[in-house]
Amino acid sequence: MRKQLDFKSGCTVEVTLHVIGGVWKPLILFHLLTGKKRFMQLQRRVPNATQRMLTLQLRELEADGVIHREVFPEVPPRVEYELTEFGRTLEPVLLMLRDWGAVHMDALRPAEGDEIREVNRCKPNQSASAAPA
Image (cartoon, rainbow, N blue to C red; front, side, top):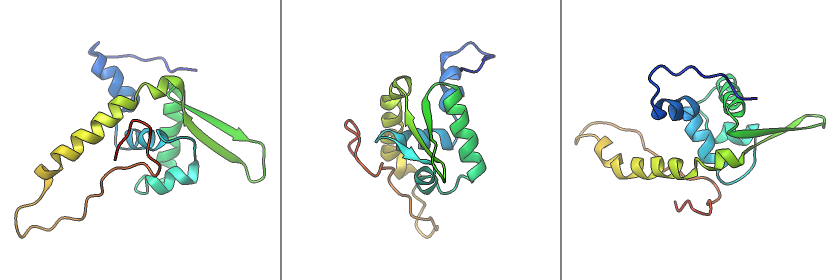
C-alpha cells in the first residue's frame, strides 16, 4: 500500500527525494542492487545506521513500493528484502550518484596537514550487472 503524498512544490525532484532522500535510503537501495539481503546483511553494510533507523527506512521504502519484504515462518523468523520491479528503475539513478561521488571525491580531500579518515569507495559485495565498481 503506497503512502498518500502531499508535495509542496509540485517539482518531480521533490517526489524523487521523498522516496530515496536521506543518508540511509540510497545506501540500502544500492546494496539491494545485487539481490536479496537479510536484515543483518543490510545492517553490516550500513553500520552507522541504528537498528531502529534501518527498520524505519526499510518500512518507508516498502510503503513506497520500492522494496519487497518477505517474512519466512521460521524460528527464529527470517526476513529478506529485495528491490521490486519499480525499485529496479532506480538503478541508473543510484549508479549515477555513485559515479558522481567518485569523480568529486577529490574535492573532499583535505589540504596538506589536515586530518581525514579514509573514505571507502561504495561497492556492493557482488557486482551488479550494470554496476562496475
